[in-house]
Amino acid sequence: MKKVQASCLGAFIALASGAASAALDRTGDFALLDSDGEFHQLSRYQHRKAVVVMSYSQSCQGMDATLAQYQDLHNRYAEQGIEFLLLDSQDLDRQALRELNVALPILQDNGQLISEALGITSVGDVRVLNPDRLSLFYTGAVGEQLDATLSALLSTTVRNTVTTENTSGCQVEYPVKEMHAAQVPDYATEVAPIIIENCASCHRQFGVGPFAIDKYVSLLGWSPMIREVLLNKRMPPAQVDPSIGHTASARYIATEDIQTLVHWFNAGAPRGDGPVDPLEEYVHEESKDWILGEPDIVVTAPPKEIPATGILDYVYSDVELAFTEDKWVTAVQYRPDATSALHHLMGFVTAPGEDFWGEERDVSTSTRTFLDGYSPGKPAATQFPEGTAVFIPKGHKLSLQFHFVGIGAELVDATKIGLYFAEGSEVDGLKERLVQAVSASDLVLPPNQPEIPAHAEYVFEEAVVITGVRAKMNARGKKMKFSVELPDGTLQDILSVPAYNYGWQPHYVLDEPVAVPAGSKVHVTGAFDNTISNPFNPDPDAEIRSGLTSKDEMFTGYFTYHKAD
Figure (cartoon, rainbow, N blue to C red):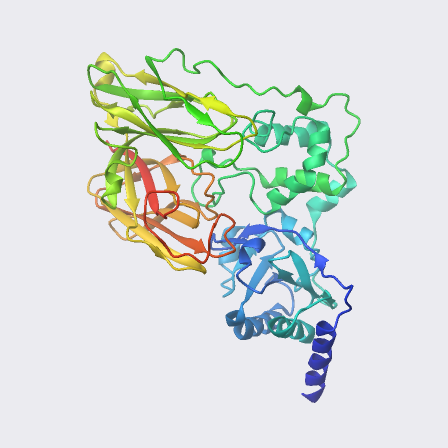
């Protein structure tokens, strides 16, 4: 015991007395979902002193003893501001990880890209990370020096990255990395097509993306940032858990494509010998036409002046509809003028005297008529599912919410909205398309709290079919999940947004609509992050309450539905 104490004391002194010129090794930001679908991002642990990550494989000999040591460190240090996580470096799927029944969160490293980035070579490798400076306190094995490093972090500054040897015989293999090292992905035939498919519609000249990727040299210049936002899941935006439901609105990018891009970046982003640059040849088809043909009616929102710089608060406007009779809308298309500055647009049908928020101003649950939303990207029109339509009574109007972002030039937007109607016998038997707003009221968000839970629910008294959902929170929103509790008590998750992004709030159209029997209860569960770790939080020291302005907070889940047959 005396030898152990002396060893720890010696390590502690070495940690605390680094040379003035010493510097911690750098690391990069990253994000992963764990086996329960929870989102973990290194830079979002700034409210913690350190994040400890250990590569884990239950099949590795001696892993049980190593995990017991690691768990003991968690038990001693977690309440003192140090986070402990496990990292699956074997690329297992969600179900396999859940069946391991391990108490600590296991990060699901799809494609092994984070294990690669952290330099994991053996099962049991540990990294102690600084979430504030994105640097490395410790690399090595579970043992005395890891314990000493964690102890030092609580009382002094660790100036040097401490390195020990992990003697585990279980090596981590990287087959895709090795394949791409043997033959680097080709720019023209492999890399550029991924960029065109997933990035170019926004990241183009006068696009809503903050920079253009319109040629090889542009991609090369922005490659460090692109690599970073892929690994920390900032892009593609609207991060939806791919293991719960599915929606094309989520802008998924295949793991294989991310591996191709990252390994190409890591190899120095070679141009290759292809004579043609696909990014230079790509032309964004910004449709000025009506995709479904000429609408039955076109209305125009009042013009809005957009300043050159800054992020604007939401802009609201009403559009009067000169209908002399009730109308059933079967399809809609938004055609903004300032597509480069419009980040999203939402439209509701409202009665005379109502504004955009309608009944949501006064009640926690309300049934409303949602027309459709708009988000940047490829031009699109929405044709509602066959047999359904949005009902607009005579005398009602459209109430719109715009979110603009300055792009360096003053613009004016006067969005056109094309409506397509059902006529005559087409109206017979149509089911009305509605949205159920389900909110948590009387929110109180204490300052400097990383996980403030919220929940709302609603019972559908009749059978319905849910076709889409949308999450609405403001700057301190953290996550939101949509579920259905059937009358027999069975709980079915519909969609989960584990990394809520205040800047992206699309309407998620479900690939597979969900039939909900009468008497079913829908749940909206989630949480807020009112700390410095939340990159959108303007003031983590403020207590925030419910409200409808962007300075307040809200927790509303929208379920788009129609009656069942």
